[in-house]
Length: 176
Image (cartoon, rainbow, N blue to C red):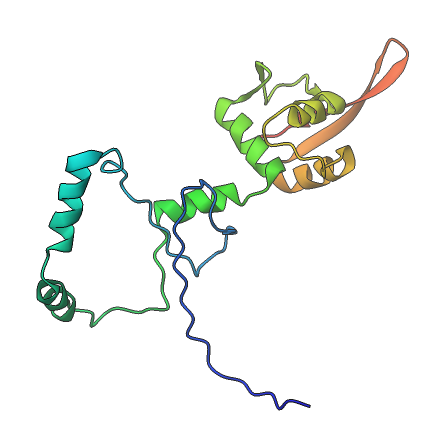
């Protein structure tokens, strides 16, 4: 048998990506420092790109070291990560498909050109089909799971209406 032991973990990870969604940052994530880089120089080509890289590479190491060694880090606390716009964006990508779909519709205040908050409400089947036809849908979310998650997303009342002898379920969404 191999003897086990515990050591302190001082692991730091740097992630760079061209993808929109990079990290699974939930709404309470506190361990990510997400920066969105300015990509204005990414279009440089040929001689312009070569000259820019040479300019950066020719900065004397001593200048960089001096800059780093003379920064005042007295109040720096490495356990506190600021909430950046990049982190907020990553959190929104991590919301899950139902919440993301709802936020997309709430920002438009309409579902299929109908006001979300109206007295008539919507057929439950219609709302679920709108989700299924959206870019946020996944094959893993059936109608039951969709409505279970919708309860966490928005307040709504469910009513039954009789249409041509057939009972249909409707939802009326409430503004929070």
